[in-house]
Structure formats: C-alpha cells, structure tokens
Image 1: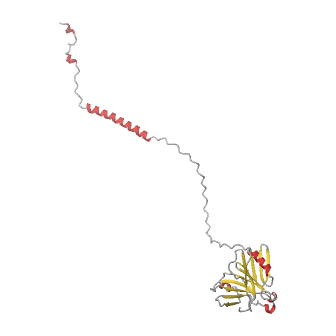
Image 2: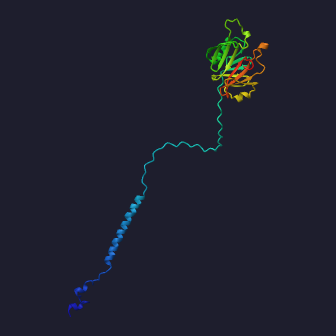
Image 3: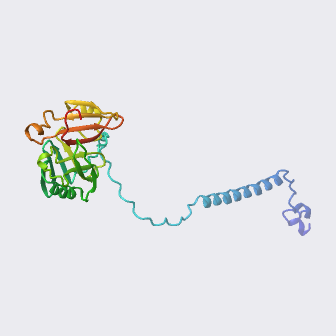
Length: 271
C-alpha cells in the first residue's frame, strides 16, 4: 500500500475545489437603478428643502425712517347743539354829530359842544355860525327877489338844508313888520353826521301815506302836480297877535308818492 493510502481522503480534482458558479440574478440591474434613483430623489428633496427654507427666511429690512412724533389728537368732545342761524341784524345808521330839531318857534342845534337855539325873529348871524359848525362847512349863498306879496330873502345853503333871512334893503322897513324874518327848508342830501328832526315825526323820503299817518290837518294839491300836507293847526297868527309860530308844510315829489321837502314858515291859508 502506498503512502497515499494513508491519506484520510483521496485528493480531489482541482476543479472540484472551485466554487460552483451561481446563476445571475435577473433582478439585479433594476435594483441598482432603483437604488441610484432613490439616492437622486433624496438629493433633490434635500436641495429643494434647502431652497425653500432659504426663500422663507425673513430678509433684513432697512430701518424705518425716523418720523416726528404725531401731534396729540384732541379728545372727542360731546357734540353740542348747533345754534340756529339768526337773521342778519339791520345795521343802525351812525350816530349824528349834530342834531337840528325843528319846531313851530324855531330850531335847536345839539352837538358835543352844547346847544344853540334860534327863534324865527332872531338875528340870523349867530344861527349861520352855529349851522356852519354843525355842517362843518360854510354855506353857499343865494338870493330870491321879493314882490308885492313876498319879501326878498338872502339864502344860506348847506347840503339838504336852507336858511332864509329877510332882506330889507334901504326901504326903512324893520324885522318887526315881517311875519317870517327867518325860515327853513329841509330836503334830500343831508350829510350822514347831521340829523334834522321835527315835532311831527315826518322825514324826507317817507311815503305820502306815511306822512298822512302823522296827522296833517290839511292836504292841498299844487298846480305842478305835487301835494302839500300841513301840520300844526292854529298857527300862523302873526297878523292877529304878532306871534311867530309856524306850521310845517310837507311837499311831495313830482310823482306825489314821496316826501321831498319840509318847510317851516309863515304862509297864509291856501298858499
């Protein structure tokens, strides 16, 4: 027996020592591709997540410009009832600096310097001076001739006011013979600071109906279409008792609708 007979086993054929070939797994390639695709998907998810996180991070805004503190707002007040609009008051005329109050016996001038009273038989010079001061200007002068029934007169004219002073001339007549040594007429155009009143309350510019309401005792239609209303009954008695107390004669304008003049003088009834 050979020594080889002592080997527990007989030597094997070299080919018997190779690992037997395993058959290829037909699913291996798709598995590899799937793995690669999974890796890529995970990578895409990571990238997209990172982008989204970056996009949603708040950006650092520039600090707001400093602004002045807002003015405090007034506290709301309790609404109050609004006053009802009232009618616009009629403005009153300015107070007159001088007032000339006419009456049957003469007139009185009242100003801040005091009072001056003129009677119809008085000399005219002091009255002219007082009227000049009241009107603030010297008068213009005019003249009217006399006739068989009327005396001649010098006329002193201020705006809206005339003073007549008898002109005796060289005839030797005296003022004591004249029933109206002085007399006056008031018309339109008085300055704002001069007010002329009378005892009957009639004013230039009144309607004739307003003048009638003041109680004239006579109304007379003149030949020129005007009306004359006479106030102060029982006056004009110079030739019976020598008194110089005049009536007031109110004449209308041409339309006979408005008071145009107010005259204090001696006039026989019907003149």
